[in-house]
Image (cartoon, rainbow, N blue to C red; front, top):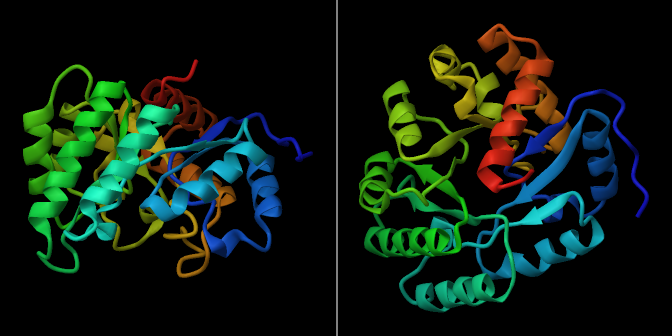
Length: 266
């Protein structure tokens, strides 16, 4: 399918975007074209459970140079009654064909402590598979940094790498995440007045940062509360340029290389 080419000399990678989401069903091609025009040339698609894989693979077929699917079981999709079947689904597909990463996986305690043991089991299991396959992980985390760190501490070795998706922790948590071979995924939250990460992020070397949108969620200011889309990565880029006192071109070049290092692109 013919797409527009970009109009600026910037190469960006959206390391985390739900481009298969039904919110894009009516204008997905236009959304992709707008992203290409501002320099986004790669979309990494995180899975949530078995229901999302078909949609991701369809996008991969339609846009093979742009869309790269991950495989994984999201913590909010975890239930003790279905976890084994869902994990079997992940493992079978990991053994069947290549994926860009295992994700998004993690622990989410925002809604309470329900199924914590099952979430920990699923996270640990999928981290182990990622290491076996030499793949990065995309970590979803809400109100659970200590629980995530506990497992990463036990799983840490030279094969462990990935991204703390939508990083929203403290400076100390950022440094600890980096110590496990992780990059920090920075998206629309960097533009929020109550996001707080913009207050300390300049203390983190830019080599540890990658860009993401998490679209259609977490749209940056001035679109907060509306549908997010990959073209808004430009707003994240602008904010990071301000935070680091660097040009947008430098931010783009460094963060894109960081993403390529994580995902094994050359």
